[in-house]
Length: 232
Image (tube, rainbow, N blue to C red):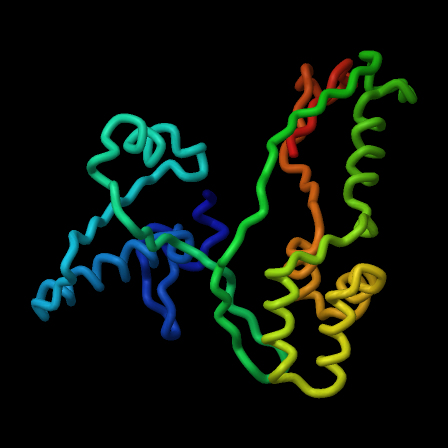
């Protein structure tokens, strides 16, 4: 991270205006803090349940968990074997109308990491060519970013929207009713929902594609590459 982009020391956990600021304050040092606090309070109150409580914390989630939770599961499963697991997340809080909701995660979408490579002809930067693979990858990214692919309205999403509708005015009741229809869901997510809700509800109703990394076989700014790869 770049210190200059922070108004405070990113590793300070500084309290400001009622909030704690710092690297990882939301994802997921807050979860570590309140999990430890709960264990501390239970111990102090001597109200432990009739089973073991296991606190496990790993730091390599964003790198695939191979040296953290996956390693423990494969090599020392007895350390974390339990009947229930309380983990991070479960849904992001959101305000709809005048009410704030705290969703509970009851199902998850699967994921597939893909790397696609486009080949072309290497050339000098002073002579543009239609065989530059960057042009191919740009068209491909534009294609998969089209937000008109068919929606998938799962039963869990339908139930989720049904609960939200109960507390809304007539207009929002209509909007959320249309959000559960395959013929109108795209129009609602793309044109009716406010900007802070568009991506949230689109992801819940569609198979999504999200480009994350583009790299090539060359790194000279004055040479167009012969191959470019896209991770998504």
